[in-house]
Length: 324
Image 1 (cartoon, rainbow, N blue to C red):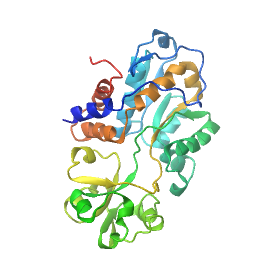
Image 2: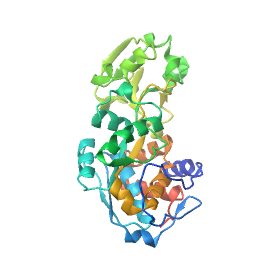
Image 3: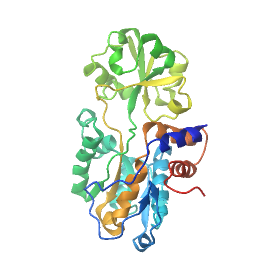
Image 4: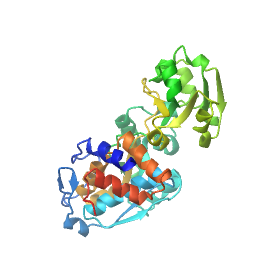
């Protein structure tokens, strides 16, 4: 059922090849040919240096790493993977040391963890966040491609029953209602702009109570009726697998920082790989809507597929590669 939904979602986007971001420096190596959104094998890409695609150490990252690696392989590149590297600091160190050619990072994470920005200094607009992060990365001879359509970020979630009872679709809809409702979130939620602090300061909300809870319990507190609202993540697989039970409220004031993925790479990598490197990565990102990413996470975390299997299913369903 998830595969059918994934296929419909990906194909409905009408994916097509995209142009360059304007930030990478590439040689005159041949471009990756595409036809109606499909990746076409280019033998000239075999002549370029081997690419090593990395990722951090959780399922969503490994899925993304596999998507990029399999797409680049389909385009003719020699590709190795170094998935499950560790935290963002470990992944960045591997990139700087030349152990990997590039890896997917979240714009908000890059700005806060690497460059010292506060969460409220991270733009909610994906491209603005990417540009701000890119301006910092270039100082270290690293570059980024355009962000993914989906964002993995904090979100205010609730059950469908609560949402229907109070007519909740956006966070602003909580105005005048929040004093009746309980909110659960991580211990640091009180200080985070993409959590309680932002809901109070920027949305002007006051809640009946706020209770810190381990993030692993963010759904169980809703199911057990311990919380009316809970801080969830936008790409949680439960939002796809149990869409009849849980919903997230739209951040209609665009307060929460952009958690879109930006592919970070070394400038020398792009120069050696040619323009087909960027084109291939940008192409396969086009189908990665929030719903599709939720479906992919569900396949791995709930249905126990491997990240490699989920990535292949995505690329085939979206028409980027031919079914084997």
